[in-house]
Amino acid sequence: MTPGANEICAFAVKRGEIEKRLDAGYNLPNIREHESQNQIMLGSLCLREPDYGLSETAIARTNESQPKYIRITDFSDYGIEDGHVFTTVASYLPKNVLNDGDILFARSGATVGKTYRHDKSLGLAVFAGYCIRFAINPEKALPEYVYWYTKTQRYADWVRKLQRPSGQPNINKEEYKALKIILPSLKKQVWLVSGISAASRQRAIKLRQADELLSGMDAFLLDRLEIGEIAVKPRIAFAVTLGMLKSENTIGAEYYHPERLAVIRAIEAAPSASTRKLVDIADFLRKTVSAEGKPYLGLAGIMGNTGELSGEEEEAEGEAFSYDAADVLYARLRPYLNKVLFAETDGVCSTEFHVMRVKCVDVLPEYLATVMRSKIIVAQTKHMMTGNTHPRISNDDVQNLRIPIPAAEIQRIIVDEMRRRVERSRQLKGEAETEWVAAKERFERELMGRDRD
Image (cartoon, rainbow, N blue to C red; front, top):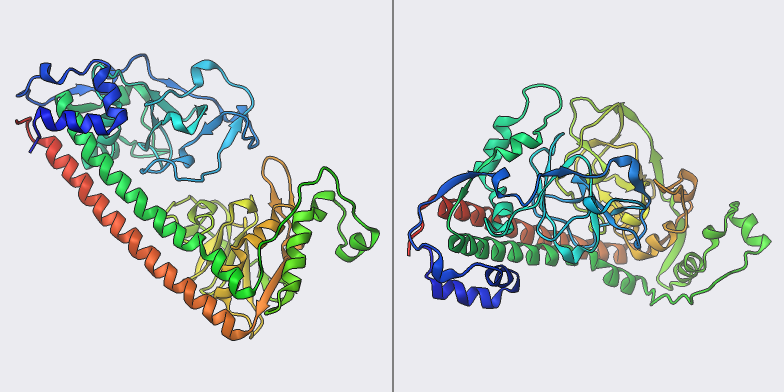
């Protein structure tokens, strides 16, 4: 049941974002208390004509001082995840800059219909040409309400019905403009937004807790390996000896960066572990198969730092690598994203993965996956990348990674702790998803009712 005006005002005081919009012209006492719901076309709610963004040709490599480039792959149905790494642009036009509250609609491909609402806290950002930007007039509708409306089953059904029966799925600008949205009174929009936003925040809290359980495994791992804090002093320049070049058989200043060398020394000094090269622990498999008709795991399918599956599906083209349960998959493209999977089932994956199979009887595959996700490996790989636009770690370099191998009982302790955290993390994610589905269903039920006191 819709709350009265006093409750709405109380909420507006607590929620600064809604309060700003109320102060900007939403005089609650003047809103009709018994307004019947109506439908209105999305295009009529816009401040200006919806537009497209920048083409891929404008993209530069990641540079934190440049504007972020928002692509379809950057956001999910839940927005942009914390810690996401963006591509950036070196040049852009002011018209391409995203404003607070702008809503992007994906117009083509498997992700057609996906939406994203921009938040100014993300900083300066532009958007990709395969998205359509709608700037909602806040005098006509809350941008937050329009965004949450696109998360309803009603909207999903509209997207599915409108997609072309053949070829690449797409929805054009005029079709999006003609989308009919149920538009209740502004008072009810505020109320609906408050409820779904609160549910979204609760979901985010649980998901963050779930991820922190896994990404926080580093401290436990390093404690059991007796590797302390690794301090590296900032340097403008550093020397490389001829002996180092001969022993590593590699030329390149970044390869001998003080951070990488300090980490290797710390691993070698660990009293409870021996040090081995990765190639001495695991075989690197490159068995290619056709990906057609098979469940396929792409780079987007693995979450960074946690080793969990993201649920993102990618279309496979050409050949793929096959892998078995208990293999370890390590992404060689942009290794700083730290995507490492302990395979729980057989499958096929992108050839951008290194597929590793442990060959030593004294090394647990789950232990290897856990240590490969740790900061002592990332500190090595980020100085071993080659290439600017698509930095990768070569086959030879990944094989030369130094891995600490403790006694079997210590490995088992680490694996057991990892399993406990994975179980709890998945439980939290399951709870978050169940509660979120219920919140969306409640939003839609309340939306379909009439305004009441």
